[in-house]
Length: 621
Image (tube, rainbow, N blue to C red; front, top):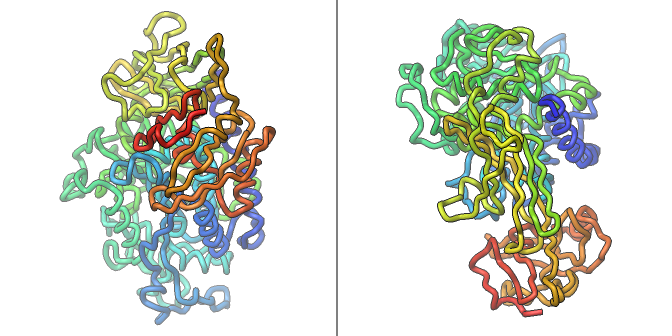
């Protein structure tokens, strides 16, 4: 299967699963006038609060700052355009950040990778907050059904700020003709028709350089009275400082801008804008490469393989013009993280057909890919990727096949972009594949010498090209029945490990001759665990087999208020039906860590994720 076809299928599979659920959620919330695909500022905030209430173990809300009007009031603000005096947002807004992560995972916050994704920095760019929200929804809806997403959330935190500029958003949505871009700071522009500061020219890196910003308060790219002067800018900066490692920052970013950060940095910043169908990465202040350009260009090229966007960066054919004081350059130069700006779609107010058929399916998978590399972006991006991963359990064996490629994604631009058609393979994509490893129920980052890891075999018998088809067959007799997660990671000849790809597999073990294995129903009845001094039936639920018994949960083990209740047994109930059954009672289907980690065997219970729970908490069957 060629690369473009594979990516199209990946987009279709993920997009169809997520959008089916999202299309229903959109119906319940206020929209921006004339655009049924875009939730309004108020509708979006309510939908996100409802989502957080539905998935408290995956999503939390933090107030990180205040809008200009919330902090300073409306004094001096009088906006009149086209003979209309604009109504101002009453009281302004809190600026909110949403943290998406599996709170019950064994890896806790200090050890998790961090991705920060921001939108509606420019108020008139309607689609940006909606794409950001679709990303959030894809993550929470995909947890425990999509292995890649499950792995991402158990090892990373995805922090999303949907509205960096909520005051400006209020004006842009209430008065669409205004095409309002900036915040509502009235500083210096007579008449009130063009006031405000361009937040994306206000950051403290190359601030005030008028090659890429403007000193005139009435201009769209007015950089503000001083660096980080705006409360919206400061909220984003302060939050980034809390998220990203202090130890990787430079003391004097502008003076040290020619010094590379190297491959050990951690953290990813994504800035969603509209429009242009472009990917922007540092540098933007001048038409020159950054000192980490090899990693950045590999990143831009690989993300391009999802959306075919042009690369707007220094020393690239599509570098358009200088931009100074922008968030993307700031996050790289000052925070030391990988940074990428998306210019989505073809206009500020995109038609719904374009948004749903092009913007969402082309960009959601790219954001998921970015989240996979967030904890070590400049290293993982140089490693090989895994494609066409297939894993299944059959006759007591795990059978895995895949393709590993160092160049498929990074060189896809040679096919899709006229400017790159005659270029040679990119340096990070020309290495030979040297190994592909399979890990069962253990992420490669947690592997230590002595742990289980299997080497896949090259189907042609030789590890001698930058793309290899690989396979593995291994006995599973020593592993319990039930749902397992399989991780794959490929290594190239320079030692670079690529992004991890994951898939769920259901093991169904056969009984040994002369013995009788308990039925799933018997196991569910006989296997008990003690929780909060109560005996609770253990029931397993997964999307691969029919449900024998259902446990619904509320609260969390981490907070000490986890409550599980057996609600019935149905041999034909699907995973989605069981999930809906729990949700109808304002509960949730028990998570992997809460229930599926304990698989019933003929002599009691097998524990593979929560070692503090021992077999004496189970009754023998």
